[in-house]
Length: 84
Image (cartoon, rainbow, N blue to C red; front, side, top):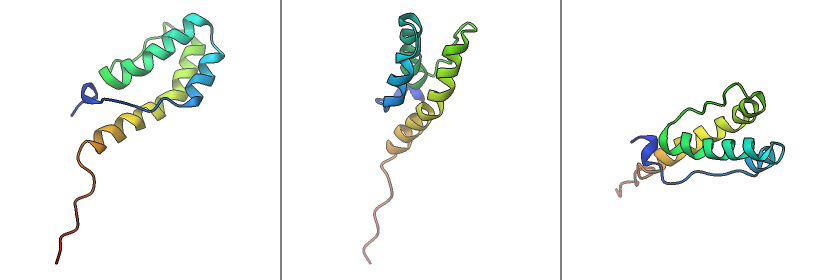
């Protein structure tokens, strides 16, 4: 299963709060980068914008964990205990 098969991820308050510290253009670029990375596997390119690179470096571990959890959750969870 690939990132393209992920149906949802968590969007944390910290992403919102980080976005509020950015300009409108930067915020839109960050908010576009999160689902593009999670759902399409597209690595963001912020053209040397250090504020965006900083914000992304803080968001990325949580986005990766959300994708990992979504992919692992699609496996059906823990096998049921056998009756015996």
